[in-house]
Image 1 (cartoon, rainbow, N blue to C red):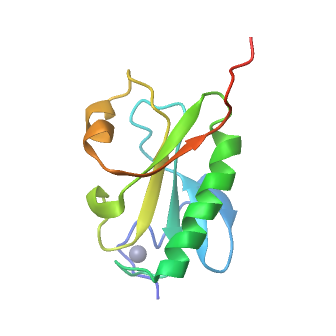
Image 2: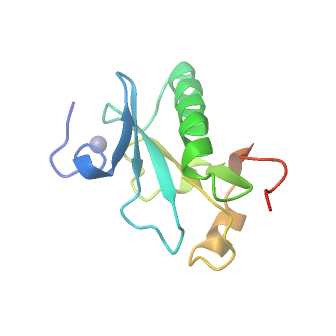
Length: 123
Ligand SMILES: [Zn+2]
């Protein structure tokens, strides 16, 4: 089901990084000062997903995030509770740049997962 007025049902094609039958990964429109900021979106318009979809979405976001965030040490997957489009399930992954405009909000949001991109930074 596609909702006309839902931004997550109508993702801009040039922002899409990955798509399968269940989820789509794309750049967020508003980067909030981050170099990269991505999200995984359920392909159906729904505010909830079954557990296996959440598991799959996290796995996909983790895999793609490791490439997208290869400029930093780690990234976090934020709890969906505070998403900007609560009617359409999605998860945001972000780096931990303290200079970005939503850093306070990131620290105040529960993290579903912290993903290490690399353990030792190359010199
Ligand atoms: Zn939608």
